[in-house]
Length: 224
Image: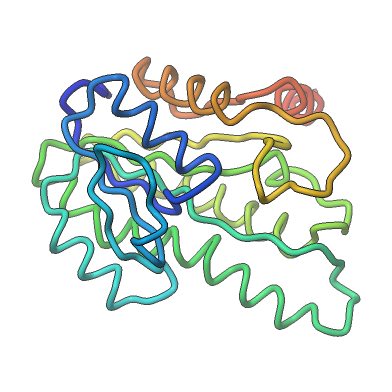
C-alpha cells in the first residue's frame, strides 16, 4: 500500500497513536486524512478533515462511510482499556463496554468501509492490536481478551477481503507512551516509533508488524 496520494480514515485520531498517525500520514504525502473522533472539536492536527465518529454507534459509522467514500486506507485505532480482573464485581459490565469499542467497533468500521475500499481499488485496512492479544495476566483482563478477539477478527478479515485485493495488516505493540498507559511504570515505546514501523510495514505489503522488542519476544516464545 502506497501512502503517497492515499485517502485515509483514522479512528481515535484526537490523541495518542491516532494523532501521530495523522501527522505521519501527512508527512508521507497522503492526499487526505479524515481524523475521526467522538468530538471533532478535539482534533488539533492541522491539515486533516475532522470527522465525527463514535465506533460504538452504528448510525455514525454508516454516516462516516457515506461521507468518506473516497477512502483507500482505514486505520482502526480507537480503543479503550480499564484495569481489573475477571473476578472483579463489575467485570461483566467492563468487558461489555471494552468489547463494544475494541472488537465490535473494529468489526463495524471494517464492514462499513469494505465496500468503499473495494470501489477504490482494494486499498488497505490496518488494525491496531496489542501484545496483550497473546497474553493475559489478569491486570487488564477484559482489554487483553478484546485484543485477542480483534486479532482473530483481523485474521478473518484478511481472508475475506483478499478477493477484493485489500491488504489487511495487524499492528501488535506493547506499552506505548500515551494517555492509555499513564500510571504504568514500565518501559514504553514512543508513538512516533510505533507509527513509523506500522506505515513502513504497510508500504512493504506486510500482513503483520511486531512494532517493539517485547512484542517480538512474546511472539518468538509462542512460536517456540
